[in-house]
Image 1: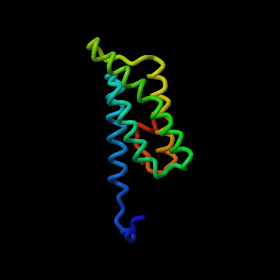
Image 2: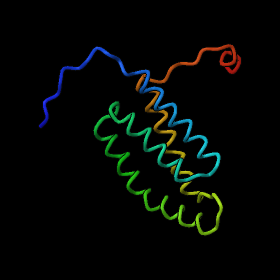
Image 3: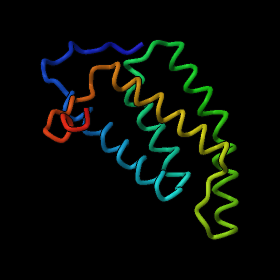
Length: 125
C-alpha cells in the first residue's frame, strides 16, 4: 500500500464545488437537450466528486445503479444514432431523474452546497 503524505493546509473546497456545480450545469443542459450520454455521464462525474462524502453502502448502491443503467443508456444512444433524434425512453428518463435528485440531496447533506441568499430567493419563500 502506498504511503500517503501529510495533508496540506490548502483547502480545495472551492475547486471541488466548482467542479460539482459545472457537472450539475452540464447535466441540466444535457437533460434539456435530451442528450442521454451527456446527462448520464455528467451524473457519474457528480457521483465521483461526491463519493468521498458517502458511506460505503451508499457508494455501492450508486455503483450498482450505474452498472445497471450502462446497457440502457447504450441502447438509447444506438437508437438515437439510427433515428437521428435525441430521445430518452420515459422509464430511463425517470431513473436518471431520480439518480440526479438523489445526488442533489447528497450534495446538500455534504454541506458543500453554498446557500444562495438574495432578494429573489426571499421572494420565493
